[in-house]
Image 1 (tube, one colour):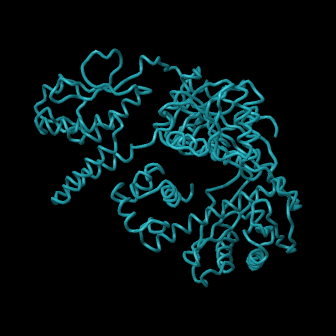
Image 2: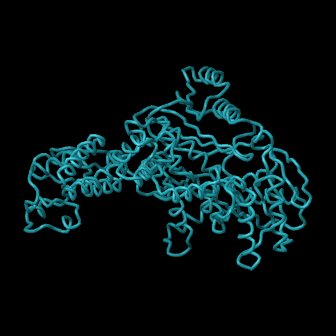
Length: 616
């Protein structure tokens, strides 16, 4: 295994290639200069949208233009929510002190939420400074923005007043906050003291993290209101429960304590991405991605073993007491012993973890997978693989555009064909197409492929699109022969056709190619860039076909998507819908939230989440 490699660098930052493959999930981005020094740390609800805003070219301030001119590379860390991104951003700013982050604060200046205890109708307010007044202080929060977001949420969920006392005492009629349902207007007596105190108690419980207790109480009131046929109140309480569910998320960026280095690892098509999260005092204080070079024959366990040994034993590096990995290592005991001898204390390599540590583990793995996808689709790797494929196929002119077709169905039901398109920069998703197949014998993949190809290339022959240089068929001689007949009938001769079929083991790396003109079968080396490109486009076509098939099947059956998940019967469906309120809320929930339903195990929660998010 070679030395650890940092993210690929070039003389100028290619923001277009970077943004093309950037995740749209919440997260943190770190900008570095040519010397590898940190410039700026920021958080985003949508990483792709936020980072794109730096490169628009117009309307940027002097500071932003100066920052952008020094960017040499950007690293991102995907989080489960914007809240986690916010906390991680503050941890990184405090630890790294980037020059372009100017709003640095000492711990003593962190803000709080304050509820006084000597008023009939207390307000919930932003507080910073000495805690002299009597009442409850909640915090500290990582920033003033976090407090304001929380106050806004409290207004929306519990309708507690936030106005100044002078304003409150001089009202003769409700203000606008009452009209927009952000206050119950205690200033003019539209709510009595006991009811307001109950809302305030719920708000305090929410700030203390007792979300389940709050939801349980409000849920009981909702059922009572429905039983009393007070459907308007029941609907309001249902919306309140739904809103509470949305903000009841696991906080993996700040845990209960402890220190650990957490690693995620993703491998595919000859590349590997290892993402490290560094946790100290229960907080993620930093992260880094590595792309070590390796041979395709190495397993993930082999790669991690070599990486961990080199990471800690070949350098003067702090070794935490716990190292969390995505899976067990064959020589894990040996590495543990070596690290323990080096540090003169017990070091543990863990993979089967729970709670906060399981959340860190998933976070690292998610980031490793995202980094790998970005690396696979990078312009430099893609150009090399296109060139390699051109040489393997002995094509005279460069391949600038290729298309791949795949078929998906369940025992012939809701057959869907996919067409994905790659150019020299990678996936060209705007040109992807799906075809709902009908009028054929159920399960006849040859007829389905013929129909899809005829529909696609009839349009292209008429000039309604651009013909590819290479047509890739996911299948063997039969499917390739079908494609050749379609192109021949349309008198399309300038498109070369190949098939990629799985070998007898049906494992990645053992595929064989079928030449459309000669029918000749050949096998490429498992570390071939050309093979990796064909695997990439084949897998993308397969993913796109399955997603379309599931959507078509669900629409045709006109039934709850929960009914298609193994292990989810009527009782569990009722429990899920009762807990979340709707299918949409279940789709928006995390694995951990789904697992909180009494009849749902962790394993089943993961299965439900995966089925509701087929593209993930």
